[in-house]
Amino acid sequence: SPPPRCTVHTLVERLLCMGTSDIASTFWPPARPVLLCADAGTGKSWVVKQLLYYVAKRAATQDVPFLPFVVEVQRLVPLLRDGLPAEGDCGLLRKYIERADLKPEHKAMLITALQLRRLVLCIDGIDEAAGFEDEIETYILHTLVPLGLRLVVTSRPKGVRVDTCPEYAQFDVLELLPLTAAQQLDCAWGQLCKLRGKGTRKLAKGPAAVSYTHLTLPT
Image 1 (cartoon, rainbow, N blue to C red):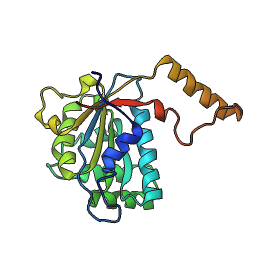
Image 2 (cartoon, rainbow, N blue to C red; image 1 turned 30 degrees about the vertical axis):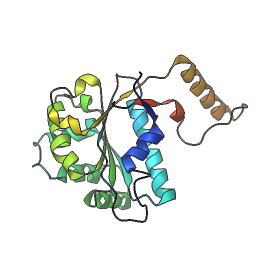
Image 3 (cartoon, one colour; image 1 turned 60 degrees about the vertical axis):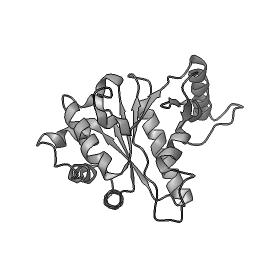
């Protein structure tokens, strides 16, 4: 039988443990970290943007106590040139937030969320670490995962050592499936209608192609 699938919406619910948590409670059960693998050009970074959008939307409309944040590996690498921090030290992530092009009040919110373990953190592009792939992977597995953050990591399949690293046993490893030609055409038509302000199709709010982005879950 084919492997099970889910949409980005389902992934958001898994990360936030929706349906198993009392939103009024201060306790939220831990979520398994997610590794999203796909070849170049399949849409990993686009899925990350969708995750950001829907987590932020949940936080704004349903009092979900989590903030989304994306760490681009290419921008993280320069901070690693002085070596990896000690295990359990989230100073590297804090430094990344402090150097981000954000308003001071937004940085303060993210740092507070980090301290309270209320970040939904997306590490985008392990395979783009320019020779620092092992260091990035070690930092994720031995520091970020034990911190208990809601974590999504993206990479090309060859950029991570899933088969040889036992720490990945605690991850849900997902495969991003490419859009079919018909789905690509439908998405392009929707964007064209949106740009021209015409057309008979009703366009969904938020990022396009959400309903067509499927993820293969582990069996």
